[in-house]
Length: 470
Image (cartoon, rainbow, N blue to C red):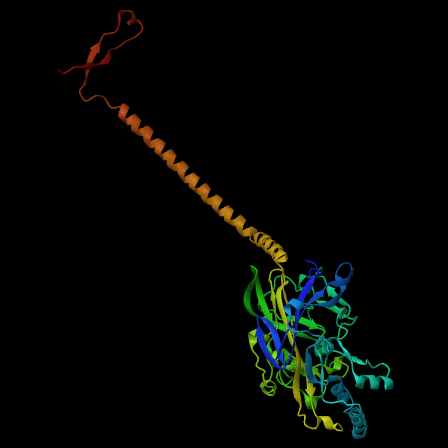
C-alpha cells in the first residue's frame, strides 16, 4: 500500500448559513429571508511535494486544497444573495480587549461607535466566505500594521495547505501506516494546557493501516480543530459492493473535562469552561471567539440547542463518519460535518454586549462528503478477491488433501472388494468341476501285470474302472 493512494481526492463541499435549515434532494440547504440558498463546491485535495525519507520509512507531503463552485448544484447567486449575521471582526476585537481594563475598552467602544460598527453585519454570501474589507480592521491596521484588513470565513483557504505532514509508511510495522510523525516540523502542539491534549495522534483521516478490527480506537488529527479526535466502530455497511466498517466520533470526543478527564487540557480558562459538545478554538484563530461543534450541537449539551430557535440535532443528518474497508484500511465513503459558532458574551466597557448572556451562536454549517468512484471501487473489489483467495489458500489445500484422502480410501476399499469377489468366483468354479457324476459308481478289479514287465515289477496292481450298474 502507498501513502499517496489518495492523491486525487475530490470532496463535495456544502456551506449552510444558519437560520431555518431544510433538506432538499439530499443536499443541506438554508433558507435566508425567504430565499432558498444552496452553495456547493467541489474540493480537490492532491498531495504535493511528496518525498520519501529515512530509507522509505517515512514520507512527507503537502495537501493542497482548492475549491470550484458548482453552479448546477447550487440555488441562488452568491454574489447577490445577502446574509445577516454576527459582526465577527467586531466581536473578535472586543474579545481581545476584554482583559485590557474598563477605560481602554470604553475608548475603543466609542471609536467603534463613531465609525458605525454594530453587533451584526450584512454582506453577500461571496463576501462572507471569501473576504471583504472591514472598516474596523482597516482602522486597526493604521495602529497595528500586521492586522489583516480583510475578513472572510474561508479567506485564504482556496489553494492553501495545512502545512507539511510527515507520515509513517508502515515499512517497519504495518500498524504504523499513515500515522503522522510530525506536523509543521513538530511532534506535539503547544496550544493546550496538557501534554495529552497537545499530542498529534493517528492519521489525517485519508488512510489507515490494513486489517482493522471493530474494537479499535481510530485517532485522527484535524488541523481545523487544532487537536486530535478519535472514532469508534458503529456498524457494518456496504459501499458499491465493498464491505466497510463505519467509525464515528463518540460523545466523549467533545465532552467537557468534568465528564471526560482526557479533555481537561482543552479548557484554557478553568472558570469559564464550556459544556459538552463544543470546543473553543480561539487559541488557533487569532483570538476570535470561534467555537466548533457538530451541526445543530449534535452530541452536545441540550441547553445549547434549546437556546437557538430552529436547532434540532438528528444523528443520521449531522454525524461525522468514516466508512473504511477493514482489509485495506482505505476510506470508501466519508462525511465530515462541522458547525462554526461564535461565543457571544458580555464584555465590560462595550455597551453593544450588555444584553449578551454567553450564547453559542451558530454561523455556518460545513458538510464535506466523498464517495469512492466506480473505477476505484472495481479495482478494490478485485484486490479483495485476491486477498480472500490468498488468505484461504491453506484451507483450500487442506480441503483438497481431505478430498484426495477420501478418494484413496474409496479406491482401496473398492480394490479389496473386487479381490474378494474374484476369489469367491474361482472357488465356485472349482467346486462345480470336481464332483463325479451321481449316475456312476466305481468298482475295483485285480489286473495282472504285463508279461514283459514281470521281471521288473513285483506284486499285484489294482485298477479302477467305471462300472455301469444298469
